[in-house]
Image (cartoon, rainbow, N blue to C red; front, side, top):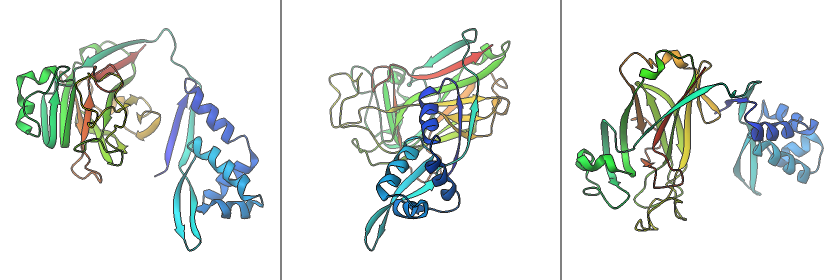
Length: 306
């Protein structure tokens, strides 16, 4: 699926990579060809009348910038790298997060969910040990759940409620929700995809196609008693809502804006994380708290305002 990349001047590393990719006439000609065809490296070399080795180098630069995607295609003469256009547009705003902007952050402990629906494998642990029985959905009602620092579910969701009274008298520029997440298999499995969605006040705010249940090295914050064979860490993902749309990290995933989520309509903001019922990859989810994984946080809501 082609994406719209949106950047500000704070995205220096990404802008530099894209600038490098677009600084070559050869690479621009490649992009023009890929607008209408999927071509492998040899086909690009033939059409551009350049050596295959040069074509491969230029393909790598475009791929590293995120402007094209590649996949291995099997053929009668072996495999070839098939290239395709991955971006439909670039949107660069010449703005930066000014020092006079203000922000407030609310950190929600991962055990403070108010609603859930989970199927095994599932469980919760605190910094010191397990909370109730493993693979027992009813354990998620245990009062000790509020001390959870890691929770996992094979399918389903958990929902949190964030305060919204601080929004009433402020001009909001954007609101962000971040969490360290990965998929959930019985033990860690790097090839275990899961489509993890965030809903805000009942509206889907974007889905992360997580590639696996991460392990193979210890999470930076994990307590010593946590077994090496288990899930170890996640990736910090951030959903951002602005007046221009909704973004997952740097990628625009929805046209829904700040006014579309009803952020001040109730006495709270409902944030749900999990697998949609129609998700292609029902791979479950791990949510990491402030002493598991790689990031010392729970689920954070950050409000940026004038």
